[in-house]
Amino acid sequence: MKKARRAVREPGMLKEYDFSRGIRGKYAKRFKARTNVIVLAPDVARVFRDSKSVNRALRALCRIVSQQRRKASA
Image (cartoon, rainbow, N blue to C red):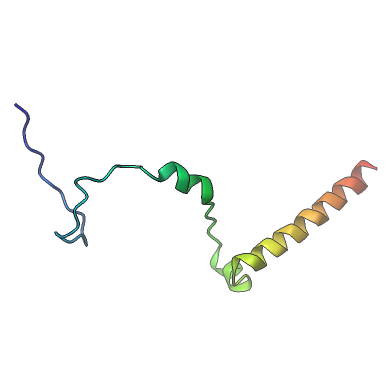
């Protein structure tokens, strides 16, 4: 006979939250495929206010690196 498992509640979780019928990792693969989180250092985050500005700067840097590589191989 199996012993009944005691429900261990995380701090901050209310009794009303019932995950007993939940499926662990049901959406994990889909979430992982679409998410790429990068945490910026605070000093960098002060310069780049949103993802558009970060992407613009990185694209510009990619162009510069590409040009430098072409010059070096020529």
